[in-house]
Amino acid sequence: MGLRNRGTGKGTKANENLTPPPSPGRGNFKPKTNSPPPSPGGGSYFEHELTMAVTTRTAKLVSNFEYEFGGPVGALLTTILLPVVTVLLTSWASLGRVDLDGVTDPDVLCPGCDEEEGRLTLLRCAAAVVGWFLFQVLLERFLPCEIVEGGVLKGGPNEHGERRLKYRINGHLAFWATLLFVEVGWPSMAQVGQVTRRGPPPRTVLQFGRAPLGLLYDYHAELAVATVVLCVVLSSYLYLRSHYRPGLLLAEGGNSGNPLYDFFMGRELNPRWGSFDWKEFCELRPGLIGWALLNVAMAVKQQEKLGYVTGSMALVNVFQFMYVWDALYQERAILTTMDITTDGFGFMLCFGDLAWVPFTYSLQARYLVDHDPHLGWPALGAVIVTNALGYSIFRGANGQKDAFRRNPSDPKVSHLTYLQTERGTRLLTSGWWGMARKINYTGDWIMGLSWCLLCGAGSIVPYYYAIYFAILLVHRSIRDDHMCQAKYGRDWDEYKRIVPYRFIPGVV
Ligand code: NDP
Image 1 (spheres, rainbow, N blue to C red):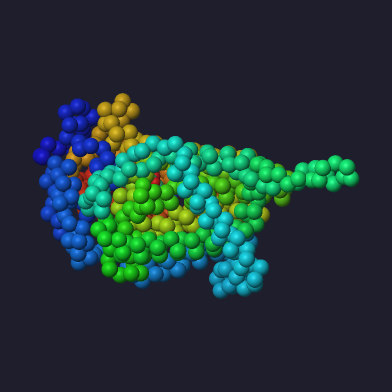
Image 2: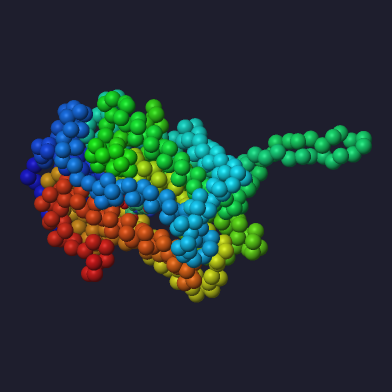
């Protein structure tokens, strides 16, 4: 299809007809295989893919394999280092400073492991982590939900012949149900009545009330260790399962044949038990909701310790609560992200979702319990402005792309210019996306920086997030750039010529 509208196109009806249905457009890209190029009609690429047998596909992928993350050595080092860093960060946030001695201290790396009572505590924490996970599974299974279809499966139908998967979308409801449960639904046994000579004996009754959230502060490090163990168990199961179930749809990037690398990247694209999707569930529920809950727990603890909640603690809770709420409210948007459409579900995502996000993203709140800088209103005001700036860029850019991809004639976006690609989809070249190719990442990072600023300048520990997130976003932008280059070819070169900056217009 040679009809292309470069640079100045408007969302007219005629142009709309050139665009394939929205869901295959976003998040699906041309794999780095030897497959013949798709004909430019958009849908035919998927038709072509659907005809490939799973075994043939696998063999091709292995022979052309391109490693990421430093290959097997990088994957092994990351698998070992990330859990260590997670546990160290929880310890450093508690101390309020970087303590390099902790790196070799078994009591820091595995708190309580060297004594019987400590090991018992760890077991209880492991039970709590599993209980939390199962509680979220129950919510996912039994709360009302909307059934939404994901994009066309990359690489063809799965072992059940499905071309698209259906997802239960109720994360937002699960979030509020969880908050309601910890506020008024936590069960406990209480004694009612008093011992008197004549009256009835005291009775033990079941009552419901507020959960003892302060315990999440008391056993923060132990819970982190228990979660890491859960992640290792879960990703080992997923890796083994991917070998023993025939005909599974494998992730292109996690099928190198090297066990260490594949364990890290994830072999199976969409591991499921029936309609329960492990990857989509873990991406948003236990970890993300757990992050918000840990923050609330830290505020509860600060209230217990100081008798009040500080401005920084309140704001970090509000900002991060909004971030989590936003992700869950927009749950269906995750179905088109790289994580769902492209990456396998291995240790990288499993650990990232379940351990890294809740325990390290809540580090500012953890730090503030014991090391609050007691910022004055001018400083808090400046942080609010920084956060609002980041939020408007982040939401503005993501919302603009989403609205445009859903309906280019929408009056909110119909004035924007775009590049009509041969692949059929359109790349925005004005508005937020005309300023920089990854301006949404910039907004996200500025928001993250504002969370760190709430902790003052007393320690670098709470700034870990801004540092780590900058590295993640730069790396992710490079990955996405490679993928877009592969799927758009010359169109991507043209887009980069029209929008030369990656993060900050005129700078970088
Ligand atoms: P993007 O939302 O930037 O999506 C990238 C895709 O969008 C590209 O592959 C391409 O796909 C499409 N695209 C690129 N340029 C254009 C354009 N000009 N016009 C229209 N479509 C375009 O990436 P992510 O999914 O990585 O991130 C989504 C959000 O999540 C970001 O704001 C990010 O900051 C945030 N995030 C947060 C993380 C955290 O840990 N807090 C981790 C990762 C992300 P196609 O053309 O095929 O549709």
